Length: 211
Image (cartoon, rainbow, N blue to C red; front, side):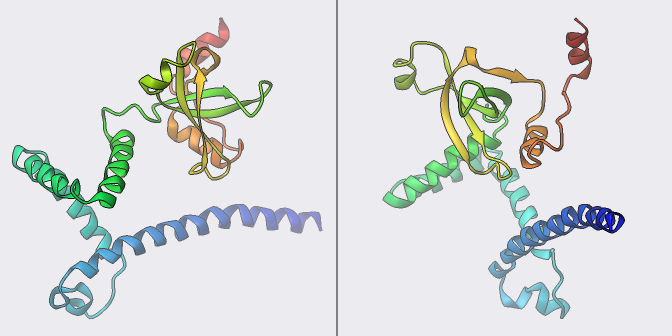
């Protein structure tokens, strides 16, 4: 009986991550394939080929994103972007949504952004406990002036779903910076501590432990 239970659990450990991976990838491809609806029916791949091929819309989406980046990388493209943003700025509700999302996306994905660049340990939810957090920046000037010491803004994700969490300002001296990447920290959180992160500079970590 114990052997059957062991084999069953082993099988689950093989199939669960595989099924979830296939499901997530299929959902992403299915969502990106919706871009085919923007094409005229006369040149729709399903009509031209006579069969539906999953992933064609994904390729189209990636090509459009790449071409958009190439076009907006020059002066003319930047002027077009400013013109388009000027039109959106005149629409009250759209303006608020667009610029809020743009500010967040620029912070997260821009090469000059500092969000989620550092993994920290912070005391949460009580002084005797520690949680993994991501440094998202520093408090706004009007907030920093009200705080007695230097603080940093952090996002504390929840496990196993790191897309949800809490946003706090914590004293910088009360945080500990970890020598792990953001990706490894996310895996650590999703696995609820089962998958330990690897140090980005193992030589330095080993040297510090020896000292």
